[in-house]
Image (tube, rainbow, N blue to C red; front, side, top):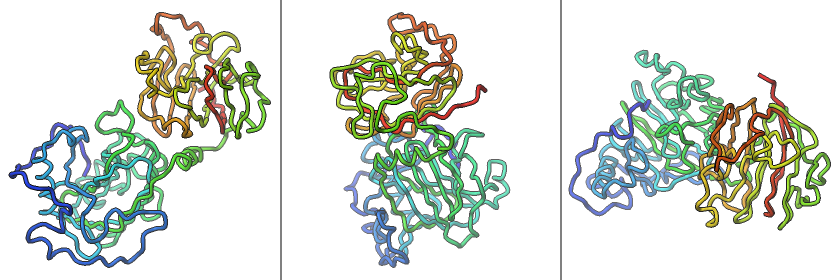
Length: 452
């Protein structure tokens, strides 16, 4: 169902006296066991995937309504038990199908997931309205595409879109209408990397690498991890063959690099510092990556200059690592002040950085605008970062999450009131500001952008 309510507007259900939580919400419910039939799989799990509904019980699942994950965590045991009781009342298992009658709490995984590939099948009926929450957030939309009363909000466009994205935002409406007739099984195939969402419905691409917005707070990126929920409203819906494959960092980076990849030109050959100037003696090439030599530093930058562009890079931080991306650097002085900006590269969680100014953490326009935190991978893992520089505007996407989107035009507030004379630069070199730590950079490329 399209969700438009505030997270505070959920109506609490009646709270029965507390009781011991059941290991299987359906299989052990009193008077309910007769509805549970042995699983009869038509298909085996896809290689590399894990079935998260075993076809026999709801082990690994619990009841949860439309509620902010923080509020769910704060709920009492009695409240959580009441939502579990709704599962037993409104959900059943028949054969290999998990069926809801259109009412009650949503079936919710106990486990939280980050980057994943998700596959499932669903079958619905007229007037039913449903969806799949990902990372505790609504949702991949499922609805009756023939219900004329909802044509005004997009039902006629089909299922599979990110309906809770802002009006006009990519992904809100599906690219094509791919729904099958009532009574037939529909298949959802989704890849989620960071906030980037790609969805196929019945084999047709309906969402293409769109950013899934954080419904609960649109000023923040999508949660880094969260539960999967099967939302149901208005009519019976059946689910089956629900399976997940978790995506590791290397694969996630490859997926992000493949998105909209045309026009990118390599700026590092993977072997030498040809095409680079500045502190070339303080950097070295190690395992196909540019690395600042331990205990050394300085600014390494491209011999070419750029104005408007998108830059892509993978970087690896050692524990406590500190570096930066130099944007529109003049080739002289400090990139953070004498260039347009330095986009900080930093191990945010190192103890020695616990009390920094918020404008000093990773992804920030150093000393000017803070980036969102919490989306770096652990030290020793490669991160993927995309930086878009268009006039005075700077946008940073880290591991598929937009952590900075700002305009430096007219910037006058600087950390420590330290001047930034280069903030008005609109062209210059691209490079790195090393700070004695062996931070590595690889797969470096730039795509020029038109002036407007």
